[in-house]
Amino acid sequence: MSIDVRPATDFEGVRAVLGPKSPGANVCWCLSHRIPSKLNKELRGPARGEYVAGLCRADPPPGVLAHDGDEPVGWAAVAPRADTSFARNRKIPHLDDLPVWSLWCVRVRPGHRGQGISHALIAGAVAFARDRGALVIEAYPLDNGDAKVDLTMAYAGLRKNFERAGFVHAADTTSVLAGHPRILMRLDLH
Image (cartoon, rainbow, N blue to C red; front, side):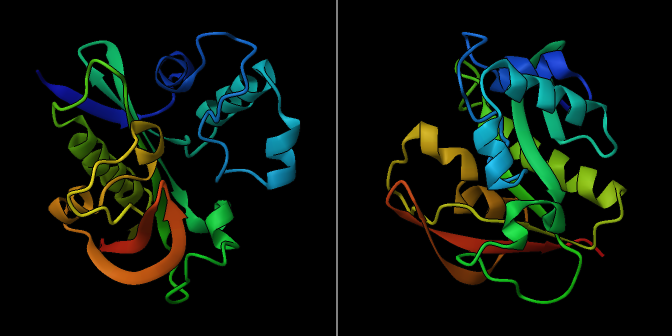
């Protein structure tokens, strides 16, 4: 298996990984941290997907997609922190005034897990940010040790996967997800 990670400009690929089985369902579409809370609550059903389609046409696109051949098998959300709700998040500290990028969602499609795709997604998201001039990239993964994590809530990623990609623990946070503390991890890109 050869995994290729590329910018998420293909909306149909994003839909395959993030979209609902039922077009009218109100799934996240990885918008919760990307757009203001009010807009996130207003967008319902198909309007959520339409909003993401617009993001896929924007520059930069909203993240990266992993492909196994032509099949989209994973997603990672990455953007400048200033363009996300993390810019105002009180539970996840700001460490300095650097224009950091945030990597906050890593998702692998069922049937493709356990094959190293999340590692490829993290590396691809880092390359995506670096190619767009990022000096530092942050992630806010779960610090779960060896404890199991509910896959629905594992979207933030796991500490060990970010450590494997060269990220270092930069700060504790007061954010908790699925019963596990989240930490702020950073990778210097310059």
